[in-house]
Image 1 (cartoon, rainbow over the protein chains, first blue to last red):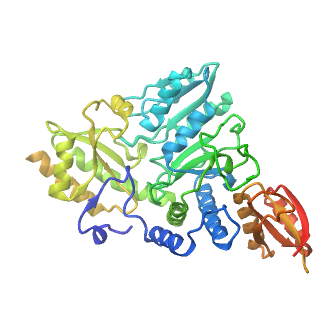
Image 2 (image 1 turned 45 degrees about the vertical axis):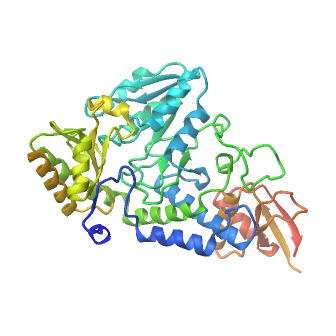
Image 3 (image 1 turned 180 degrees about the horizontal axis):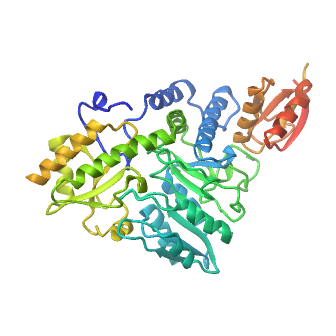
Length: 392
Length: 75
């Protein structure tokens, strides 16, 4: 892996759960190419530049489909981010009188639309997780009701990195004939994920984290079991197709992609996903897991440090939350930035439910996240910095 | 004048897929705006010389690539 030090003058970037950085040079090159050489509206005209733009968008669709084990690239629907994707899935699928099950480790991108739907008559069950964020699939099964139509789960926590048992829950949802929606914001590109093997029906992904693309990209992948007549589009409008009709199209992907897409962003996403595919998700996972192990072991040696989440790096993605006894997370974060050039995120990470499960509400935590370009030297430097702050 | 087969599709993404499948197997294919006489749609369709219709249809069937219909015209 490339060391960021040559890019950032000894700045250590450990905020990958928020967004990955730096991006591979291929991403910037693809975006520049799109802006300077292509630039036209994908699929809105028949001229050569519009066709070339549409080819780039389609290449991104194919790359994402390959990464997530989706056989049909037309079932990859692009949107602004994973939040859009979760809103599309939840608001599009659930109706008053339906029951949906989620976990106690969700991000607000899941919980806020669910709480809104609850006010509209959707029944919502939040299955509690243990103090490390683990979810027992049996508790999901126990929460099923006659009117349960969906289980909606975070694949891994953006606070503690805890991996939720998606495949085991997928077996339950398959047996019951209900759909499984998975929020892969923290696992796309960093943890092997296959919609067929893991029995996922709706997969929400972001482009700008482990997929190494730019912000403003993401989407929803629709598995073959999803009833497309039931899933209503949250946006309707121009699609570049069936222009003679004022009725919104019902075919994929246009049904869920109204308005001009983020062509330049999708050019970057295509490049980023192809970097991930070339390296291999297993190799990326091994690299990050090794550094996560190093980080967890080091933090455990630091006096006053309290860690959250499982200590086995096999049970988590490389997202590590901790606190130093007697210090507020904001104080620690400011010192890391100003004195040690270490960039991380502190506080509640838009996930009060997860912090409640982990016992870190309302204080929050300091969060280190390891990424594609992170190195053992950077992890060591971060550990030395935390030790210095802890010993002051 | 050459006679062409026009594969009409629902979406731009479908047109992209048709083009890729055919071009990967070196079957001549060009994406063009849908001729007005076939549809008032402003979208694209895949144009293939009629002489290559049979291999094109077979390739698309093997790849399970959908299209709406095939129409013919001279260009």
